[in-house]
Image (cartoon, rainbow, N blue to C red):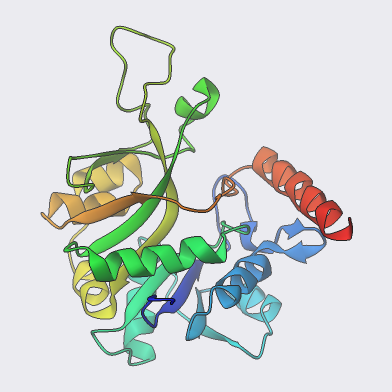
Length: 256
């Protein structure tokens, strides 16, 4: 029996990406990336799917009956801040479970989206997220691949673009247990609104990672290994090329 609680998937999406301008509208298999992400959210069984954006070009690209577009301010510092505006605009109750699915995760598996919603419900943490093992040194040293380390209670100790934990006695090697953070979070709408009102922190600004704000203010983030395969998200042009190759391989498997 499926014990996943009811949840909303909210997808923050901005046009002005510094590493890949116009990223949400870049084509994967002839379809804008943001549409792939919305379709993944729908497949997960969300009670509703919301695109939070400040750009009419993104809103125009997502014309789907089952998807709500929430126009937001262009001044938000992070995706969670953008979603907090939607929480107010759409009058989400404080108890609503919100899954923040990044707009650059076009191949997010439905099982993973449901998993993070369930993890929030079953953990004592204010936030929940997922991670996958790192095996390749190139990924471990890539600043676009965010790393996370956990404590014995499977709660996040730190997130970084740097290679952590650093294997002091084995430089150049990937330590056992190294984890890549996946760009997905779950929290309640009440915590989301509280989180967005907190001033940005030094580590958040330094690493450009919004989840560090939660840790610096003493909130807990539950981290669980993803039960389904999460292909890497799209941050750069080379990532976009890889995403199109992945889409072609998936399309080929469907035709077999």
